[in-house]
Image (cartoon, rainbow, N blue to C red; front, side, top):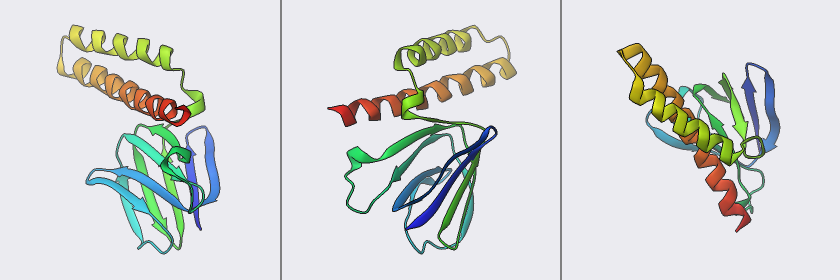
Length: 141
């Protein structure tokens, strides 16, 4: 087992022993298992997925929407530091769809590069949250 710590600005979100953690990085997703080589990397905005036990199917994985941060892997400890991370149970799909639509509208109304970049980051954040919501729906099926 590896130790997985997901730490946000508001505190520790997850701190537990797990079998596998899948992390979004600038070079693509990486899966971390026992005895992974030491690594420090950026965490890209995306979905962090956690498999608690070796025999758990993909449908039992837990998912977290994150806006990026920093990853540190050392001595079977995976520490991810992010501004925020939302678990499946914290995401209301209807509210997230509304926020996604509002962000796209804001992006369409952007008058300068700064406004456009801000709006695009909101669109991306809500899209990641929608992805986690979709993964949750698939679990239930």
